[in-house]
Image (tube, rainbow, N blue to C red; front, side, top):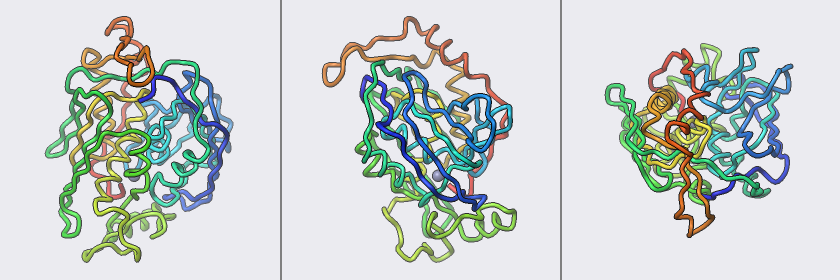
Length: 327
Ligand SMILES: [Zn+2]
């Protein structure tokens, strides 16, 4: 993991449709200054200030992760785009969007990552702060859990277990860096069960959903003619969602995140646990780049580091949802 903050080299634009609205949307990503993080702007609204991609802005975790502001400018389905940005090592960027949903593209982070790789990122003259886990932090709900353990790097282990003849149990586990993210996770698509997709449609949701932007599964298997991109594409997509949601911590993680049967609501509950236990993590930066970066500079004291993040983290009152039917 690089010791320096990065932004994108130049402005990029995507056009697509919203998964739930089915409406066309234009997404523009612009370079941003150091320490500004990833911020969203609804260009179709008069927003007073950009919405930081930060966990205190989460307003809904059903079906997808939605962030918003007091002036009612929600932005939904943030997780695949945020996974693409943090997965490719982008710390600072402005995301402009002319509607309430990030375009679903092909249901994965692949199209975003493809362009991010092509234009590249620029190193900025500021250290990157990382959130280092010192002691296990966990959230459990029945047989679902999400936890983070101390680890020298960023690792994810994601297990899914559906009561469905075609999926059942799958586990994906890897140390994540931009190369690994681009190769193994970016292209993994969202998925849904045919009967649930039909139910969503009847409720005016998933109107933009099609076999072009989701894997659809019925009793016999995958409906999409081309089948799967990876044998364990479902578990990989869950890992992608997890990375995209944890981007809302605002700092890259140094830890091993383990999740079983989790959804967006559980990811958010884990972040609330983290915010509530500042003695279990620290904000750190490295004094040297590359192999010699053994000298780790810890934020002056654990207490102050905790306060730095906690000042943002007032747990909002968000209803936690169970296992979502669209991933
Ligand atoms: Zn997803």
